[in-house]
Image 1 (cartoon, rainbow, N blue to C red):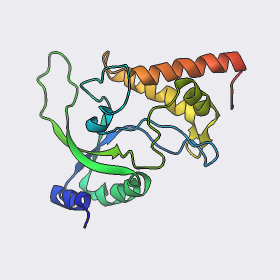
Image 2: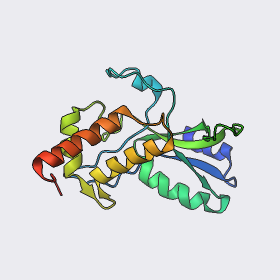
Image 3: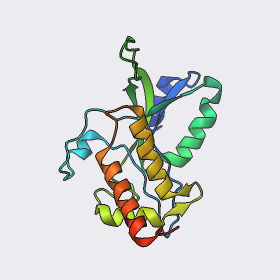
Length: 185
């Protein structure tokens, strides 16, 4: 039994659980794989060369999965996510209005990207990455659509929830599309 399976069993197979949502990986093909945002461990982040300070928070949405649907959802997610990801449980702090009292954190399942995954790219030249995103399309749609929707969703969470890298890629993609008339479409 893997450590992750043990942790999941300790969490309880008959309990509802919460899943942190951050993206999908069906926006490309083997010839032009899609690029998606991936959560990584802070210890790995600290080894990367990036001139931007890491934020103290990861913004996203948590989805409540009723106990009756947990096995079905877990089976689907394990097929889609488990290859190249580790499973971790982390506290999720729901956003509140300024006048509301803060609710208790929710224990939430999160898939964390592993640098050992062959699809894990690490730092990329942002201009080349933008061009790659514009030409990638898969069963779930265009990779550019994923990127643009990701930025919109992040900005919709909070005034503080934007991501510099995501916004930079969106700007580059829009500029390239304008210059080259809809690259890859």
